[in-house]
Structures are given as structure tokens and as C-alpha cells.
Image 1 (cartoon, rainbow, N blue to C red):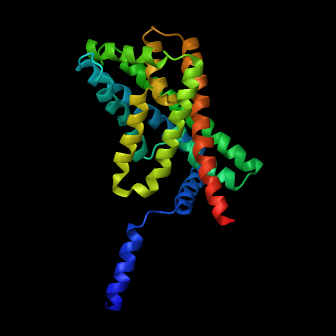
Image 2 (cartoon, rainbow, N blue to C red):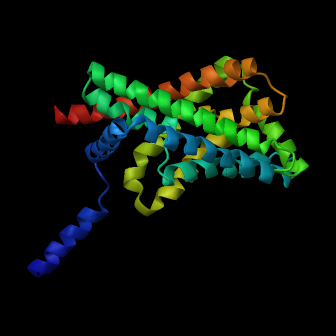
Image 3 (cartoon, one colour):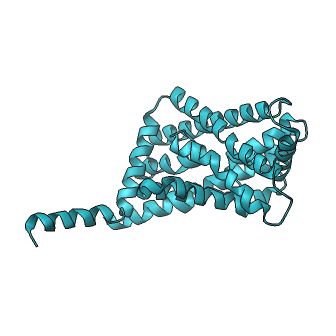
Amino acid sequence: MEPDEEEHERQTAAERRSLSARTVHEALRSEGASELERPWTALAWSGLAAGVSMGLSMLTQGVLRAHLPDASWTRLVTSLGYAVGFVAVTLGRQQLFTETTLTACLPLLREWTRPMLFSVVRLWLVVLSANLLGAWLFAWAAVQPSAFSPEVRSAFAALAREAVSHDPWSAFVRGIFGGWIIALMVWLLPSADTARPWVIVMMTYLIGAAGLTHIIAGSVDAFYGIAAGDLSWVTYVWHVGLPVLVGNSIGGIVLVAMLNHAQVVAEEG
């Protein structure tokens, strides 16, 4: 084999080889560091856009549910709509709280200082608040009688009731799994290349189909019920707001960020 051909073979093999855990870790850590340096106004606008975009999950599920029969397989189809908001947010590079729990946490694990901790907490609070505001704006707009047909609004109301149907402990446990899946999705994306949309759909579809909980997606549904006058804020806080938020955070920080960070640290010796 000629030297040029051999070099070409080596380059092709290197391109096809999966990224190492250290490379993925560094890519996400660098992304998290960039997010921490952004002004809070930029984070807030991006988080607001993400909250509104997550309304697409409720919208798509509602439209599918309104046109499908009430059967045992219906949830498996409507859960495809659950992924739409996540696709828009992730490919649109908008700030979603459950994704920043991973990327922002990695710089903190590498450099555990008070200023870094302050920056991480600031990012989480700004993004979470903006996400919830965006979710409320979408829910408020969706509840207007002229926005959607009665059948679709009835489906939205059913989604709202389902969002608060879990007791706090169940919502918390399901939130751990939901946060783990979202953070794992973020960990997979640097290696996904052109398969990024499929990775997002596959992972988030699993959350919807399995009936797991997500703080922003669940808030959009519950906010619709509040805006329609069917649910109270106390019900939202007790069955979605607090337990799902804590569960998602544990799933993202402990089960993905810390464990994957630990394997990279172990390799570095």
C-alpha cells in the first residue's frame, strides 16, 4: 500500500472512531464554561424562548390525542409529540434547565470554588425562571378560546390533569429518571453528528411513553390547567413544581454529571 493511501486509511479510521469519554467530557465542559460567561440577560432571553418552545410538546400531543381513538396504544403514538419541543430547544441552541444541570455542573466539578458555584447557581436560577415564564406564556395563549379547536383544548385539559396526577413521591422518583435521560441525551449528542435529531427524539420519546416527569414540559401542561381555572397553584407546586424539580436535578447532576466526570478523573489518574 502506498504511503498516501495508508495515511488516508488511518485518517478515515480516526474519523469513524467514536469520541472518547474524555473528549465528550471536555466538549460539554467547554460548552458549560461558555454558558457561565454569558450575561444574565442573554441567558434569560434564551431560557424564555426555550420555555415557549417546550409548549410545542403539549401542542403536538394535544393535536394527536384529539384525532386518535382512546385505545391502549394511543399513548405510544401521542408520545412522539412529546419530543417535538425538545427537538426545537436542543437544535435551536436554547437554554433548558434540565440540560444546563449537566453542562454547567461539569466546570464546577473541575473547579470547585465559591465564584464558580455562584456562577452555576445564577445560571440555574435565571434559566429555570425564564423557562417557567415562557411555559406560562404559551399556556396562557393556548387557553384562549380562539386559539385552538374545542377538541384540541379538551386534549390539553386532559394533559394538564395527567401532569398533576402523580403523588409527590412518585413525581419525584419519575423526575429522577426523567432528569437522567435528558442529561444522558446531552452526553450522547457530541458523538451523534448527523443523528442528533434521532437521539433527541428517541430519548425524549421514552420519557413521554414511560410516563416520566420533566419540570418544564410538565409545567406547560399544568399551567394550561391553571390558566383554564381547572387547577390551583398549590396543586402545581406540590405535585409538579417541587418534586419534579428536585428529581430532575438529582437525575442530571448525580447520575450523569458526577458519574461521567468520575470516570474521566479516574483515567487522568
